[in-house]
Image (cartoon, rainbow, N blue to C red; front, side):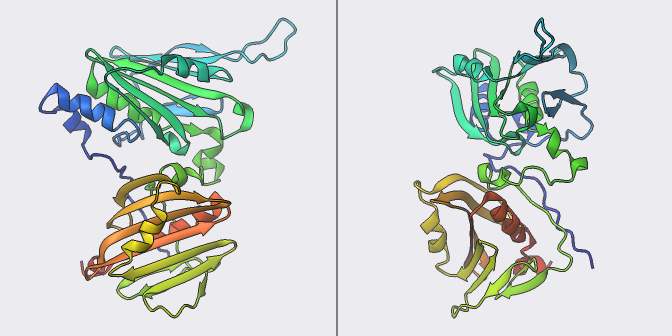
Length: 342
């Protein structure tokens, strides 16, 4: 039987809908949301939006945004390709947005990233790739600036992608920011079949995952059920409140107990944590974090009241990000006792 786990995409922020942004009680509420959610854009249905390409990247924008100017990589007088700026400018009657792909585009970001009274700076993961974000408010104008280092490689290797826009309409500003979250390297397109960026979880630990679990083995930890791929072998431990598994150079530890929260706390310390978030994992709210310890990468999550008031903690460690990503998928197969009773 083919069991496909489908997990809704819910980004953990101070949760507010797009409608809430537009209908906030006062301008201050909208302003605060703009700054507080700079690295967690509100999900928007972008399935019908056309994609525009710059370098080896495509981004979906609302259909009313039309290309106003496109500057390709230039050629010098001898006919050889130069490292000239590639710029894409799109406009609508409401606003405009500029994208630049170039080895020196980082300086554009640095030039605009300065101290302001109403500004937020953060590290995000738009499109599943690490990016640096600056959002600010100037009068009644909502401004946004971000840059990605082209870690997806290809012909963009060594370059930086910078995107910027400003809008007097807060609803449109939130919409454009959500559009930038559709950033997708061409190599990650679904038709390429490579599964996108397997390292995206490291920058956004709450990113959902799904997998066909046909042939996976089911395990029970008291009232909690979970499925693991055949490559993951169980390691017997005397503690009946734990399950341990190994696959390659990666390991998984699950603990369900009154004090299982302590296990998570051991990894959730500033010197280890890379990113943290709160979101729905396995249909129950969880606290999650990505971390790195020496040559090991890891992911940790804990769920409150997972089974009759007991905490569930999961810790995954491996030598590579891809190995952690492979094992992390099993957490989205978890079925809690409450879900079985519905």
